[in-house]
Image (cartoon, rainbow, N blue to C red; front, side, top):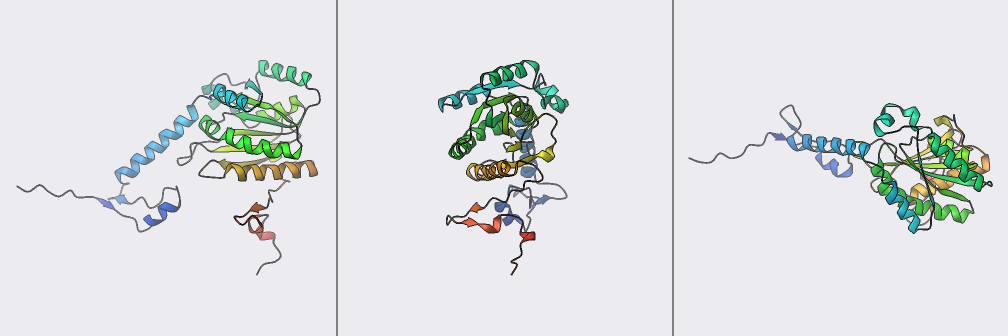
Length: 277
């Protein structure tokens, strides 16, 4: 008796060649009216990675030690969200510091009454994985450029269970002219380690997102560390010049091309250009 040949029910998708150009789930093919098994398993694996990223504990000790090796002081604070479950269910608590952290920051501010040009904050957010992978190499590039600009930098403030707005309270207590927070973004099914940057001029408690500028998807497969630092420094310079941030401050940074010349095609809003051809 002959062994029957295996029969595959997988119907290929004619767009399959496009898959090498994007991590998006396109051209997966089908098995009858369903997804092929390997596509379904890959989806479940990506979903598990995203869930793990949300619940991964923030290794603040490891990051603090790495920063200390580079000569950077750190301050470890905690939001008003006492644990991860509370953090996920009560976003408002993640936006404020707990009482002990406020007192600690006030003590530091009394010892440094002159304040800072830039307060630097790192918070776990919704992906501590992103923070652990990308915050250190990004900070190296950003702080090198910020130092060249002559700006004074606060110690790197590490916040457990922090949301974006917690940076406003930190910046206000430190007497900082501006603040930037590096935070883990909500994991996607193709990006469990995306780092977000949020920048605010004249930070204070109660500001809304309209007063912040965001640079997202900082990771090896997204926006490079160097390009993210370049865009952030542009926003900082413009904020100092115009005394504002948020919706009234647009990212019109000239992007360096491979030739070393600014690529003006990527700067500004092409819809507003007057030299259409």
